[in-house]
Every structure is written in C-alpha cells, then in structure tokens.
Length: 229
Image 1 (cartoon, rainbow, N blue to C red):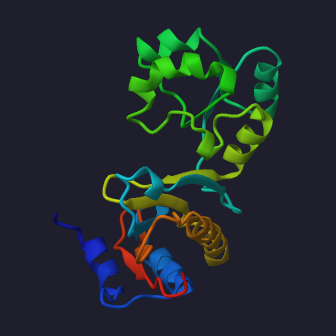
Image 2 (image 1 turned 120 degrees about the vertical axis):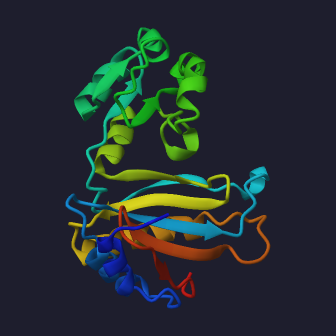
C-alpha cells in the first residue's frame, strides 16, 4: 500500500521499534494526525484469546468519560410506555414491528446503535441477517437488550462504546478525536483498558494482551507498552 507524502513525514516521527508509554503514544498520535478533517483516534488490541472457544470470547461495553466525539444515532425497539421513555431519553428513532419492512425491504439503516427491550427481541431477531453482519444486533452483554431504555440511550449518547474480538482475536475501538486534549484521550484510553483488563477470560492460559497500537484515521500506528497491563 502506497502512502502519501504527509503519511511519510508523520511516520518519520514514530520509532517502530519503540514501545511507548500510553501518554507518550497519545501525544505522538495527536502530532501525526495531520489530515484536513478531525481524525478518529483508535486503539487496536491484539489478544492471546482464541475466539473460536466461547469461554475465551471478550465482549462488553464501556462509557468513555469524554465521549467519542461522534454523534451517535440510536434506534430503540420497544412498545407501550417504553417508547415514550426512549423518546424522552433522546433516541433518534423509536418503533416496533412497523420498522421491520423499512429495514428489511427498503434498506433503511440511518442509525449507529440498536437498543431493544427483551420483549421485542422476537421481532428484532427477524432482522438478524441484516443487522448481524453489520454488528448492530442488540446484545445483553453490551447493555443494548434492556428494560431500562432511558439508561441505555443516555449511556450511548454519552460515549458508550462496544468492544469485541474480531476474527483475528483483535479488539478495535475508537477512543476519541484528534481534536481532543491529551488528557481527555488519556482518560478515555484508561477507561477502555480498565474494562479490557477486567474482561480477561478466566479460561485463558498464557499472555492476555499481546500488543496495543494507537493510530489516527490517516496516521501511522504507534505501539504502546503492554507491561503495566
């Protein structure tokens, strides 16, 4: 993959052989985010887990203290008074069965997170083929299947992110924007790492966190020392 001049200049600032302390890595990633838009800062964590075994799966959610810097659109599947609660909490779309054909047939996907009350999961389950591959299916572990729709919507709007292993046992999550202060990024990074460390599967033998890389949308990756984790 050929990179542009800006990337090459930024890459010179990063020593690929060095494992940086988190605060140094954050400062470096901010410095190398030189695109014309506000780049997203992401963390990529390579684990020693084997996601093919259910007991070694990692999945959960964490509220970043300073949010993600992104406006998140929330769709809530509910009925009765729960619809009003979801609307009052600031959900962008609320509804029930009538939304199924809109999503299934019209390809409507104007939302980033789906929340559902448990009594609606039978309905939402019919959207498995559409929502599943996009990682949008509500899940109790991520707090998106719940009767407390007010809290679910408030948390998501406040900067709640979901983390899970991908097929190569890596966790990819955003921790903010390049425009955030180093302190805000550090607080978000710490909150994420606390959650990941606590999520260590008890069945796992050997090293849990193999590598951590911080990167901006267009910038080079900066390796973070895993020693303290």
